[in-house]
Amino acid sequence: MHPWRVNFLHDCPTVNKLLNLLDTTGAGTITSTVGITTNPWNTRLRELAKQCQFAQALTLYRQMLRSGDSPNAFTFPFVLKSCASLSLLISGAQLHSHVIKTGCKYEPFVQTSLISMYCKCYSIEDARKVFDENGESKSLVVCYNALISGYTSNSRFYEGLTLFCKMREAGVSANSVTMLSAFVCTSCAFESWNVPPWLSC
Image 1: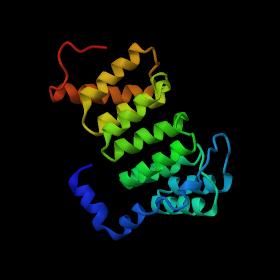
Image 2: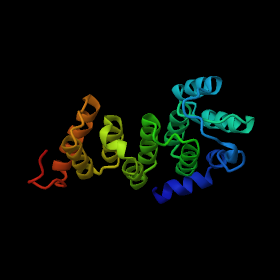
Image 3: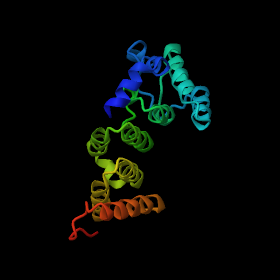
């Protein structure tokens, strides 16, 4: 994360409060809930995230933990999106620990949300670690898309294009999202002379 962004998070009272939303109080009661739908909470979280009310979504997540209910694979994409949109890397990392505690880290869309969150918080190495730690990632186009898009948005075009080539070598079929990110990577990489002339997929 860039230094100015760290200073902003700690200097802004509103955002600083958000950093404390996901402290360890109540987190110890989180249990594995894969396959269980916490309907009222998840429905409201989805609505808040869709309406771009990200701070409210994080507050609601905190309320859910305090109520004694546990998050599940349907919960995390919405709260991770909220952290990503507010560039709250610390809170996002705390959510990552909740994901592990609940046994949801291998759920495809939770994993994709984690990768996207880290990329949008300028922590691309953590995003790559999430991708590499799960062997199933290398067979899922959604995980490749999240990381390639993250490389692109962080101006790391050569790495994005290299991952696209590895995806093709692994036999994973690309979709329109993949091709768009790969096209941007290719165009920007060649323009900035970051791609060796011998590289081809």
